[in-house]
Structures are given as C-alpha cells and as structure tokens.
Image 1 (cartoon, rainbow, N blue to C red):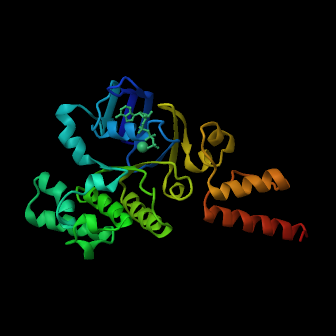
Image 2 (cartoon, rainbow, N blue to C red):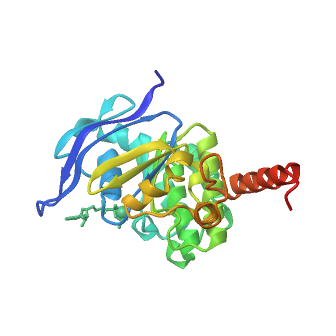
Image 3 (cartoon, rainbow, N blue to C red):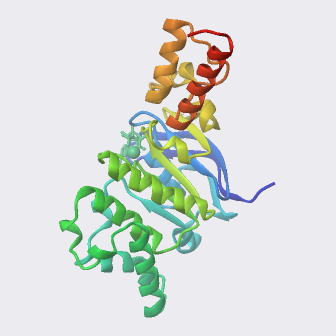
Length: 286
Ligand SMILES: Nc1ncnc2c1ncn2[C@@H]1O[C@H](COP(=O)(O)OP(=O)(O)OP(=O)(O)O)[C@@H](O)[C@H]1O
Ligand SMILES: [Mg+2]
C-alpha cells in the first residue's frame, strides 16, 4: 500500500458554542494525491482543513500525518510538513515587506540566512512576484495577495498543502495563474487538498473529489466520475461544471447519446465533440 500522507479516523469537531461542524469524518490521502474537497457553504470544509494541521484540535477521533499523530507534542513538525493557505490572504500577510512575509516561516524554522534567501527567492519566482519583493503586502492587488499568501507557505517547502478557496474572488487570469502554480507543486509530488465550491477550474488538477455535507463525507471518487454525476451533485446542493451542464442538456433535451461519463473539462469536451462529429460522418449524418 502506498504511504499515507493523511489518515483521519472518525473525526468529530465541536466548536465552543456546542455546534458540531464535523461528524464522523474518515479519510485517507496518499502521498502525491491532489484532492478536491467540495461542498456548499457551512458543511465543514474549512473546519476539516484546520484540524489537519492542528489549528483546531479534534473533539473525538484521530488524525495522523505521515504516520505522526496530530497532538500538541508533534505540532511543530506537523506545521512544518503541512502548509495551510487561508481563504483570506490578508490573514497571512502582516510584515512590512513581501520579502519579510515570505521569509517569516523559514526564519522561524531556524534556517541559515543563506537558506532563507534561497527559499524566499524560489517561492517568489514560483508565484511570479519576485519584482514585488520590497512592496508592502497591503499595496498588492487581491490576486497578487493570494499568490503572496501561497508563497508564504511554499517557502517552508511543506509536503502537504491545504488551500481554502484558492480561486475565490479572482479574475480568470489570476485563476489560471493559481492553477499553474498548483499544477507545478503537484507535479513535484506534493500532496494537495483544496477546499472549494469551484467545480469549473479546479477539477483538472485534482485526482480525487470528496463531497462534504452537514459535517460528513457523502461521496468520494475519481474527480471525473464525481463531477459528472448530475444526481449526486444536485443531492448535495452542487452543480455540474458548466461544460458538463451543456452536455447534460444536450443529452436530456436532444437525446444526444454521450456513451460515457459527461465531459467536465474543455479538453475532454473537445475530444467528445470530435468523436461525435466523426461518428456522424461515418454514419453519413450531416
Ligand atoms: N468559530 C466558530 N464557532 C461556531 N461555529 C462555527 C465557527 N466556525 C464555523 N462554525 C460553524 O461550523 C460549520 C462549518 O463551518 P466551515 O467554516 O467549516 O464551513 P465551510 O464548508 O468551510 O463553509 P464555506 O464554504 O462557507 O467556507 C458551519 O455551520 C459554521 O457556522
Ligand atoms: Mg470555508
């Protein structure tokens, strides 16, 4: 069996006001997997991510990260290996300059000045902000702040990256930037878990999708299977990706036979359309 990056068993979490946000969540994530954690607002996505790196402590159940239990005495190592990118980038940027913000983690981890400089430069280049290194973070645009927040985590070179709504409130080009950064990190064998409602842009970089509802995991499977299952998504208040909606409509309104699962990305839709056109040509249809 492949090594587990994350192993969550029967996790329950109750906030101090007695509201249960997680109710018996069990989950295994292998090293190098990219996971889409999907669910409507308030189902417990952020609460789950915050439990994974020890920002919150489970009320019941256990979490192991690379075999180490998430408990007080292991938190230093866990936080080094698990980076958390908050939904609001402003929560992650508080130093006078961007450079200082990105250096903050490595300095705290006790690296030499030379190593810190190397890591900061690498992280800033990766997110395309090297020219902004000396700017105060509050002068950055929102999309730049988002990339900067990711860089504050990348400079610590974590093995697992948890991202909370990384594409929310961004213009399409900034979304593409984020996708490229995440693709790059994923291709280096890092484990990624992304909490989101975004079914349109993030599926193409994730292997597996988990649907949460009311503090529980309701479905889990390959992204292209889960995100093409109209009935399942509707049941939990979600929608097919826009491209899947088009094919679903063609199927239901025009009896177009898709033969396989609905395409959920532009490239799979393109391939499906070419197949359908060629099939029609062969059958002599216009
Ligand atoms: N500090 C808190 N105290 C009490 N209840 C909280 C607290 N934070 C979150 N909750 C509740 O826990 C539940 C799960 O919240 P959580 O933020 O994990 O949801 P989410 O899936 O991340 O939602 P969203 O998509 O809106 O970010 C919600 O019902 C929320 O009201
Ligand atoms: Mg949230």
